[in-house]
Length: 268
Image (cartoon, rainbow, N blue to C red; front, top):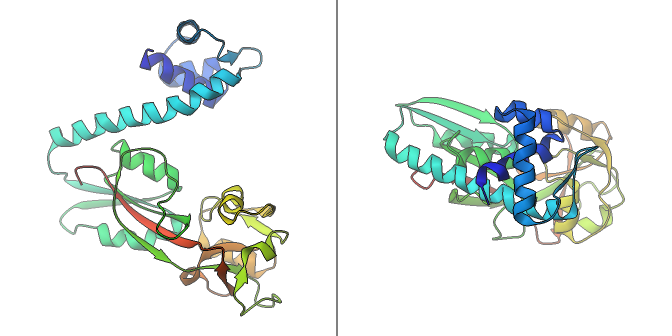
């Protein structure tokens, strides 16, 4: 299976267009079509529908394997490049919004430093492929469990766990009380996937159905999210230390923590 064709397949699926994939990869549209045709011949089944462009059941299964394979290949190239380049003259750090305060621990005063704030999976991938030298990412997990990150091969240099609390308006009837997450499954929630655990992931972790969004927040500003909570637009699950100007409902069950991981490449 040719990795070039596999990469073309992933881009067509993600962009939903042969022409868009051709522009991004620097091929002609006919070249992209040929790549997909050869790949389908290799595996012996159709992987994509053409009009409209979509993924078949077999294509969806291949996609599950293709993205981790390509990511690890890019990470391997980045590791080789790091060894060849020698010590860096600048330090590029990535952090998720709630972990940005920890990025200062990675700063080396003798180097020029750039800090990028972004989504958890994007930061992990950027560390793996050499776009960033280190990263600090966070999320919700069971105690002592690692975060659910892409299979990048990046090393977790250290981790930290801290208590979680549900952020609620100050006049919430449960203000001041520890809660079981299941009592809030039908409450109004704010879905803020760039800051908090996405609500479908939260439902999986809490082993409960519900946690449906009343509002979607697409920003990465924690203060903006807390302002929405304070105004009564919905609840949010956050590390207890981050709550300011809202009521904190400490999570008594299920056993979940807010976990922060410091990521480095294998030569960091």
